[in-house]
Image 1 (cartoon, helix red, strand yellow):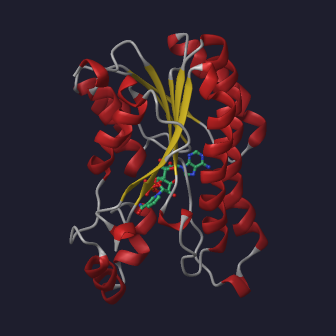
Image 2: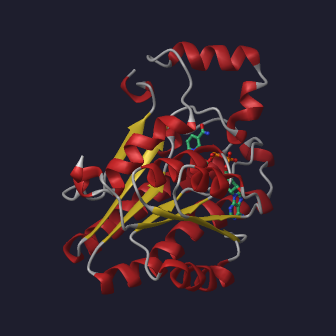
Length: 250
Ligand code: NAD
């Protein structure tokens, strides 16, 4: 288990107040990492869950779609435990309207958070990791990194682009001891997919297409994120790992 042990490491997880970010933050804490949970929500649920497990965690409440505050967020995070070893760019939103009616604001809101905040946070934390000579960055992609989706053109654009950013940064920083990879979750039960889950017929047709025969849960990302955050994946660079119950294999 030495390869997967994160004791002494510090992980900054964005969008950690619930859903997949919460599952990954708890998984990283269970592997020994100290967690800085960054989220637009003031909810302390994740931080309290980690402390209840005997782990260490702190909350930073911030709207990451505002580029101007990102440097301050990273500086505050560095001030908590003195370093950042792992960055999980998970915060994300989705806006569902047909392409012909897709509002400009919806397009920009989605790109600002899902793509711009992930790149600019990686840049700010990456500078610190370059100096440190090590680091792990894990971006959260999607099945819409590969497929077009329905009624979510901005989201699809952001998730295609995040794979490109993952590879671009991996190329530049692999030689500096930093590994950048992504996880592409399949259909997972969270707030993000709640509107789909209300549509019984669509939910059933999606479930039938998943070889595992079920939707994923935040717990399903614990193992993959610990693997990509640990030295077990030190020779993996620029990869997008699907955690999808077999959706992409179908
Ligand atoms: P969620 O809505 O449950 O969680 C989103 C998180 O992001 C929350 O913690 C929220 O507080 C935070 N957030 C939202 N806006 C923010 C902002 N402006 N600044 C800072 N934080 C903000 O959704 P989720 O399903 O857990 O999504 C997490 C990530 O996983 C997203 O990037 C999403 O695109 C991706 N994803 C989800 C699924 C799925 O099926 N649920 C599938 C593929 C990819």
